[in-house]
Length: 304
Image (cartoon, rainbow, N blue to C red):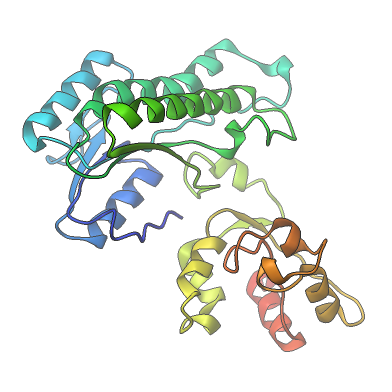
């Protein structure tokens, strides 16, 4: 689930969303429109389903250049460009488990979508970012593109395509720092999102679940009057979670000691939240605070 809540960025803005018909693109489009009715949403798709959309063959340089020029002619400049295209698997191929499964056809398809398209978008859409105020060009990267964070291996094509994308983002950000000082180039890592791209993999995770925003809201409804409620829901629905039942004497108290204080800054050394927590609302783990609530939460996850 993608959630956008920064109204300062998305206010009276001209926002181009490339891949607006996809799972992430369509959700962002709806939320940006909901944030401010004065936002101008420019949806760019491979095949138009609405008259207001712009059609673009994203792997044809002439088509990309033509689309960018049409948008420039109609809107002048853009405040935000979001490229939401991505490819993880195809009809015939899935991410490689070993180097022996590397296939050049699959490699090329993945690089075309995850790397080539962002290169073309950079070339033709970065020049139409406004220079009068802050502007953003953003691409969907992934943690799997990190070299230092690669602890498991595998997924050769996808990892490499995102690593190449990360270098594009870094290099473009440097050029923009002196060619358009009000513009920034960023890579977005939304985590595992419940879309067609990730569905074949999230369905195979036995004890993991990808929450929708609505499910997260229901789970945390006891906190719905608290100021941190929305942040909790956003975090719970930002990626797969692993759910388990712990049994034993004083299991609730023992688990809470293992987790550590709610605020990772206050947690004891070597507790889960001290080791892996980022902030109060992103503290990596949730645990029942009483036997009574444990029963409620166990039913919530395992009643079926």
